[in-house]
Length: 196
Image 1: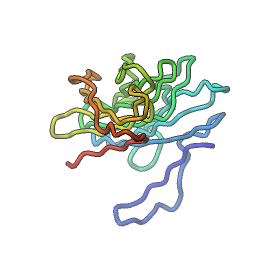
Image 2: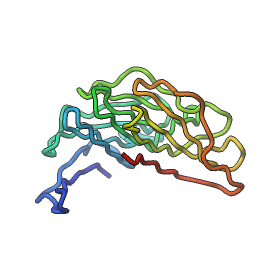
Image 3: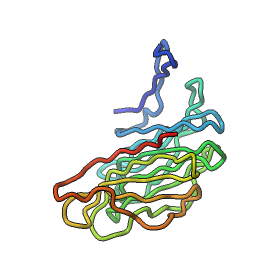
């Protein structure tokens, strides 16, 4: 399986042809994409299986507005352990993109920042650190306050609940992780959006 893309105009008219974003060896699955007005570009991220076995990694590729690839594929996080299910959001300025994912080395939610020029910051953002598993993160940018909200499903109480964490543009955690929905049954696979 590979990652491809297709441009669609604002009126719903698709481009004549699509394009490959990544057709490397192994499977590439679970893509997500965000647009940044700074540099007029998208960042596509995915779970990448090129290393073989269950050593899944997080990769990305910048895509210019005409649909051409900008630079090379980015190894966003590729240690020996498994990382999966990435999600990405962007700020409109020079701060770039924040990518969050399930880090199965610790069963927590972690993140990385990709700059507009394709540089990957060395900082690993540890979004969640409680007891129990945290998986399936989603992220949105809050343009009013200049920060991100990350949400995920969380097993700290035994069943699965939805928790969240505010994150600054530089990856700093803002205040504490907080519960969003903790009903007695399981809550899974959250999504998040901002209204401006």
